[in-house]
Image 1: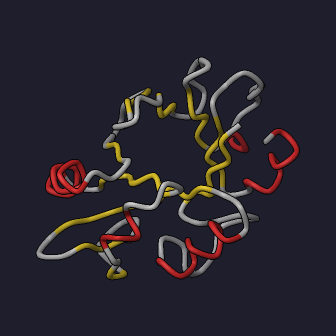
Image 2: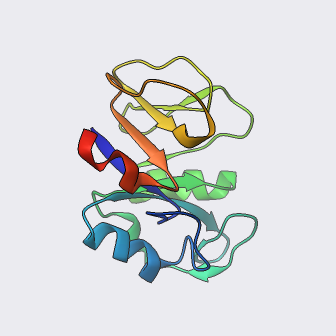
Image 3: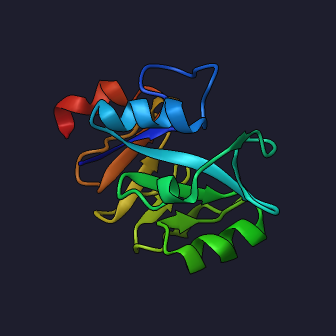
Length: 142
């Protein structure tokens, strides 16, 4: 099972979520990370706004799942060759590597990434992975 630290969080939301150093710590601990990415004149991360500058080489790491926060970011991430996806109010969306990014409470498949399973009562067995603020809880499933 793929274990993805939501914004770099391993055991609950953190002050520096989405920051490159914070996300690298999650990678170093053995997790993949979902990171919110913006593109203006350069690369940024941050949930509600561009907050931290990020090195584009970081976005290409195999452990990094880029959530494009603006359409320009999606276009640039695809051109860069990063693993990425874009969604707003969709039940599911397809990532550039053909995973089904699945919003909480939606039906799961063997290609699904269950997003924030801690917000729902759901059996994550059989899905491709989980993306959680508490991803450490799912380590025994990995």
